[in-house]
Image (cartoon, rainbow, N blue to C red; front, side, top):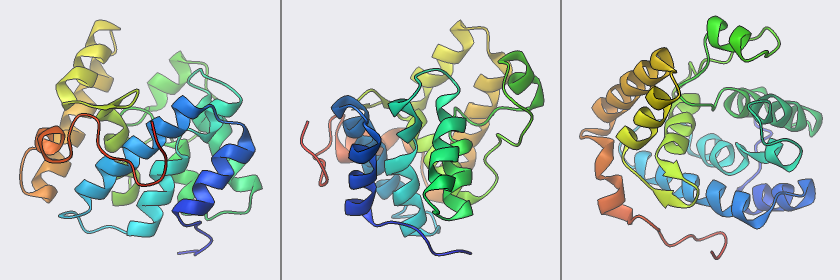
Length: 189
């Protein structure tokens, strides 16, 4: 595993340098707080998960469509950061996008499914955050269902229960543990 993974302060500097708006930075820090809680019981590379959580939306400095994940992955790659981090950023959307989803959305061919535990933790931590509020997974699942993305909703539900099993309890307890608006160590709201 390559080790070119910035620490939290380095991630925040990269977000600022990329031109991310404060609301994106706060969102990323909230995802980081959720991921940090998940890591208390899920065995994964902490530094990689935290960097992935903080940088997952760096592409929003350029584009707010579904393309932000691809653009963000390219940005991370150009910065010379680890391939594992590139993968986390590229694959963080929902519970991943399969070939059918990618084609339907007009994305270039590629692998958009989280496969490593680090990719899965970051993707699902993002699913548990709406703007800067920590939510239960059912909120994100219903949002996908209402858009007609039934397969994506089912993948998200499956990912939730896979990670809940590793965590040792339903991850929907996280808002109760860290609060809906957790204290953020890296940035103020």
